[in-house]
Image (cartoon, rainbow, N blue to C red; front, top):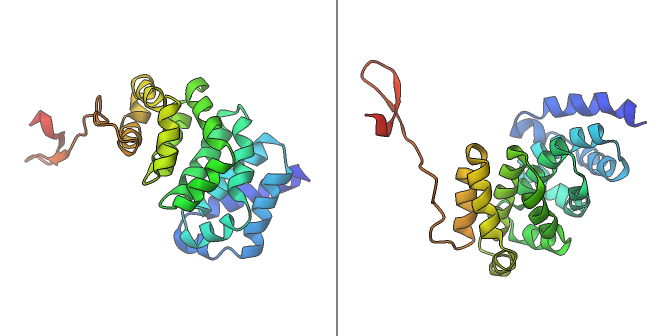
Length: 210
């Protein structure tokens, strides 16, 4: 059954390239994808399914439907999996679901998922996974004093600063954004945004090179 599903799920993930396509996905299929995530334990298939969910969650229409079917709780259960490719998709999907959604952030907090993310931030050596962690932290902390205070009590600031140092290419910008929404005054330390400028000859330069 799981082997049979892999090919159509991979095809679906390749089709979900725009808001229009995502909005064309019926409620029944959305429920099937969520249900498949809940029922399978095959890592490769789980990763493909979560990749689909991540793209669907970028559509507000699909997001509303997914949230009606306990997708946050189902994804939170996958945070214990120690597979980098899967974690990147799971955390990326949670980040998309919690974006501009305080109620979803509270729902995620109630699953206990915040502690899992903090553990991943301590243990995982993948810059791509840690980038998604920083984005998720930023989204759930935005305008949520209770979550901010909980994260601060768990040394989230030090964790994020360490990620900015260790995975600077992946985490400098999103880590700074997370620290800002945690209320840190020195959130921008180590991040030097560059502005691209078109030179007279048509070549592109970084602003401080001119």
